[in-house]
Each structure stands twice: as C-alpha cells, then as structure tokens.
Length: 259
Length: 307
Image (cartoon, rainbow over all chains, first blue to last red):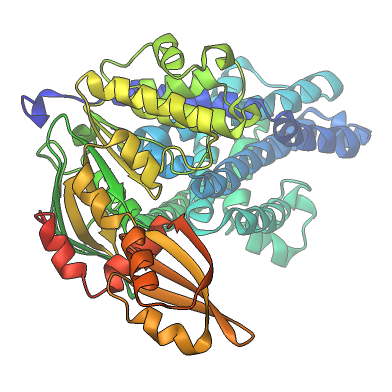
C-alpha cells in the first residue's frame, strides 16, 4: 500500500454513462413499462384530437394539442422513472451494494437523469409522428430545435418532483402518489383540454401550476400562442421548490439508512 | 482495516459496543457469531455504508466513506438481490467499470464456473448461481480486501465447496479476506483466525483451534425421573440445561464442552437415566453458553483475548 491518494476513482462521466447505459437496458427489457408510457399520450391524440376536424385541421390548434400531449409524455416519463423507479431501486439489496463501490452517489444519479431525458425524447416520438401524419400540426426547423431544447426545461422540475417522491416513499406508496399527482396536475394544467375552455377560476388557479406553465411555454414555442406573462417565473419557482424537496428527501433517506 | 473502539446503535439496540478489531494484509479472518450479533453492522461500517456513533473506522488508512478509500475493497450484495433484467456479463461490466484494473469478464466467470451463463438474465439464475455471481462481484475489481457477509448461506454442499475453493485461490494470490458466518463448518474450512462476535462485543479472538475449542459444544439428551433432575443440573461440566416434562419424567438437554466426561459423571453419580443421545450443538446454543455461562470470562482470557 503506497497510500490512498495514489489511487483514483474512475472518471465521473464514464461512470455516469455506464449507469445510464445499463439503466436503459434494464428498462427496455420490461417492454410493458416502456409501451404503457409511449402509448398513452399517442392514443389520447388519436382518440380525442384526430377525430375533431376543427382542431386537427387547424395548424395552430393542432400544434397546440400535440404540444400539450407531448408535455404530458415528458411529465409522466419523469415522474414514473424517478418517482416509482427510485423507490423501487431503494428497496433492492443491490442499492446498498452499489454504494460500497468506489464512487459517490453522483454518477448513479447523473446516469439516471440522462436515462430519464432519453426516455422523455423517446416518448415524444409517437406523439410527434401522429401529429405530423394525422393532423395539420406543423413545426418549422427552428421551432423543432427550440422544442427539443425546451424538453430539458420541462423535464427538470418533474424529474426533481419524481426524486422527492422516490426518496421519500416506499415503492408501493410512490406509484400511488405519482398517479395521484400526475393526472390532476395534467388535467388542471391544460394538458388534456386547452385552458381556453376552462372556467375563469380554474384558468387562474391553473396558472400557478408547473404543468400549466410548462404547457404554455411549449405551446408558445411550437404553435406561436403567447404564454401568460408569469409562466417562466412560475416554472422556475416550482423547479426551486422541487429541488429543495428532492434534496431534503435524499438527505432524510441517507440519514435513516446510512448514518 | 482498523476498527477502534466503535459503538453503533440502532434506536435502543446497541449493535456494536466498544468494538476494536484490526485485520492486517494477507489474513483470512472468520467473523463468527449468531444472527444479530453485530457482524453485518461491523462490515457495513468498514464498507462505508454506515458511520459509527463513536470510535473510528479506517480502510487502507482512509475513511471508508470516501469513494477513493474503497478502490481496493470488494463486497457482495447481502441477499441475492441482483438487477433481474440485466445479463450476468452486464452486471459484471457495471461493477468492473468502477475499478482501475478489473478482471476481464471471462476471468471472473471462469473462476466461479459461470462462463456458460454470461448471457443469461440474472432473474433466470438458480439461487446457487446468483450466490456465486454475488461473490464473484466482490472479486471483479481485484480488491486487496474482500468482505463477505454469509457467502454461502442457502447453498448446497457442492456449490459451497466451489465457492470455498474460489475464495482460497483468491486469498492465495495475496488478498485479505474477512467473512462472516454462523456456520462453524464454513469458518473451519476457510479461516486461519477467528473472531467471535456476540451481543455487539468481541467475545474471543484467536487462532482457529483455540476458538474452536472454546465454542464447540455437544448436546447430551437424556430422560430422567423428575426427582433426579437437580442432580444432573449440579454435575460439573454441564453449561446449560433445558427440560421438557414427560409424565413423571423429564427429557433434559444438556450443553457441554466435553460430552464424554459428562456421561462418565452421569454414570458415576448413578443417575437413573435412559434414552441417552449425544449430538453436535448448533453455534447458537454454543454462544448461549458462552455469553451466559459462568465460565465465559475465564474462557475468553484463555484464548489470549485480543480485544
């Protein structure tokens, strides 16, 4: 032994990519989990938007409808993969084992985030394809690029919310809570029905939600309908709140099990 | 690894009470003790999973909580909890990726006779195969210290011998191995030095033979009339007695270090016994007598009690 400082742990990014790759493989081997996530927003588009010609035939409304369901696809991927996924992993004896390997918690978490983003993009593919083929929705090249970048902005707050749930709750409770959070948030955020048809009180309440802020920003970029003025601050504020909740949940988990 | 005056509590339960233990390069140490003795807690401190409430734990001279200190450490998942959908070779690659100079997947799988299973998902392995993979994971990074928690629990005899041989081979290459077990047989087969842990303290620490003599106990079963019971309990060499009433007689179970001597005394004292049986005692029973018996202090001192 020449001294502990002569040895170095493996590079952060290499370990992150390793975890991301194997996390991806792990997910894809349970096809039903992948399919469920991919199909729901696409089916919603097929059943509720495509048959209504006044929406599907109008470029602005159609693009907005596709954008809403795309936002939902990202939100649900993040909440499930980070909420339910983290809670499930914590319950496995493999999780403490991984903590004895020469690496901190960072690479594993980064790998998970990369994996979550990748699945968010994959979840957008069927929605985008159906929008392109079966409705009048359209995007310019520039809008498409902006939308691809915005996915990260939409994913981050929900990913943090997912982590807060995943590190706080057992896996059974986490799945229930994810569902209880996801659908009301999606509905009240105007991801299933456009907020234009909301009653006044719901529209106002909706503007305080992260899902509505995200939805309006996505619609602004893709369909050119301006978001309400507070959308960016609201989304940022929720991102901070969820980051704090995620950190607290992680700390309390680490304290309970590892101190 | 060095553990110095370490105490660790879980709520009201004291899992480790002022424990000190140093393991030097190249040793093969068996931590022996009944379930709940604190063996697993001790290993979790050394592998950086938990921190001590008091005292210091050092791994290669560093803090085990720092990732770099764990570069030469190999551990196993405690239960057979491997990611079910990953293939054997993928799990090995995941672990290998954390080390500077890991074994190749082929080498690892060959050492543990898993070569044919490289492309199998871990969820499809038998219990014994999972266990072998779990122990193999401890060696992937060519660690200089291997910590194994109950490495062969639940394995059949043949699988157990394959694992033991793999561990002996690895130790022969120069590595330090610390394993916990509540099987006396396993510790006998592998360890040179044995540390007995019970109720959160080190009860004995010495060479295999010394410790074996200390914990090896026999069970003597016999039926005597209830009136003769107190005479049996009073015999020298009887550590503990449990009894079961059978009509006007009692079925007694005696624990003794030297069963032959106890039987001779029974005969000598003309105790009217029948249905005599002598069996090996479980480690749990042996520990019961070690921790509660009046001879404990003397016995620990007799081994030179390195604390």
